[in-house]
Image (cartoon, rainbow, N blue to C red):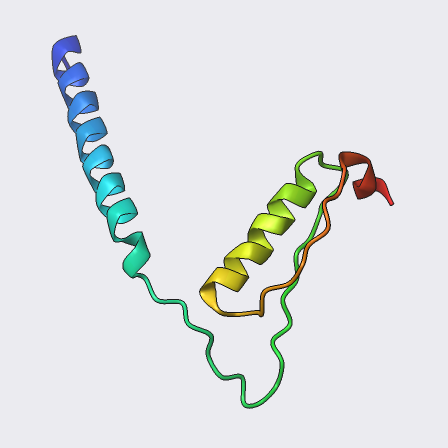
Length: 88
């Protein structure tokens, strides 16, 4: 295959992926994730830290905020944590 044809295919693929990505991002707010009934039982949600990780608490707080924004849990007051807290 000629080099220019390979470059053309790579650019075409990049354009298609970009267009599809933009489409998904623009339609993301329309995706519904309302809480569903669990036959009256509470849902159990786990968040696993696979070892010391400096961004663990910021990711955990973002995860919790996402659950609050989606209506899965009630809004709670979260305390700020430091990176050293992940080893406690």
